[in-house]
Amino acid sequence: MLKTKLPSPKQQLETLANCNVPTFSEKLQEHQLSSLTPNALEILQINLGKMCNQVCNHCHVDAGPDRKEIMPKEIMEKCLDLIKEGDIHTVDLTGGAPEMHPHFQWFVTEVRALGAEVIVRSNLTILTVNKHYRTYPKFFKDHQVIVISSLPCYTADNTDKQRGKGVFHRSIEALKALNQLGYGQEGSPLQLHLVYNPGGPSLPPSQEALKKDYKKVLKEDYDIVFNDLYTITNLPINRFLEELIQKGRVEEYMQKLVDNFNPSAALGVMCTNTLSISWDGYLYDCDFNQMLEMPINASFAPHINDLQLATLQQRAIKVAHHCFGCTAGAGSSCQGALV
Image (tube, rainbow, N blue to C red; front, side):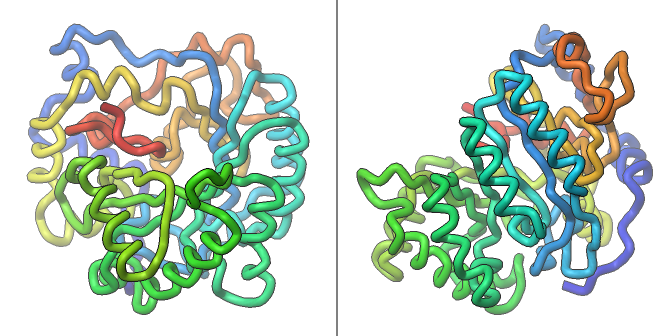
């Protein structure tokens, strides 16, 4: 994909707000739902940086090889302090390609030493780049890392169309390496999950039905196994929003999301138990708010240096039109469908 300058976060929010649809808050009220409030903090989702070896069409982070933003080590140390202080059971590492951070292995080792589970959201192809990254599957196994991997389709054409030429077959190579170490195998504690997202402005199909298709095709064609499949809706942010703008389909897609609003999904959105931390240490209700530069509502400055856990749970979660993406159909979170 040819990378272009995207609209600013403010311009993106204005584009969505100009659609002739209700606001997210109005939709909650329509269904007698109060504003979203956080439950106990369980998951810390940390964006280690925007550097990536891929430039995917749908990427809401706008990541790529030319991005230089990476989390300073002192911010990583602050994250470790937060894990010690809070009752956080899972640390979810994202990027870009989180594996490209120079202190990635040190950080995973430190988090695991604190007793928290570690999720790494891998694009898979990074694990095939060179000898250094080819050692990472073994590192994952040694530290019992949960691997959640993007694979938007089980066919080469559809995957490469969305993620770049040759991505599918390199992804298959990485999956085989993980399988050989025990990942995704029946009875193994090593968890390997795949992620599907639509190739265009549509909602994901049934997660359970699609998982059966993925398991059948990947096993029969490539002898690959995995644990679970997560379906995630494309949120109208960054590159996917740019595509919608270019095709004149922003209003159409927003209307689709609103028409498929699911109040049951709204009750389980990930921002209620997750805190997102950007590469520069700012705090957000979710990864999507992070990309739209919507920091948390708090009585303190929204940065990890000023974090006060005691008051964190008293905030109201910030919402905007893009939140309809998490509540449409079966719902969508970083752990897949919600209902």
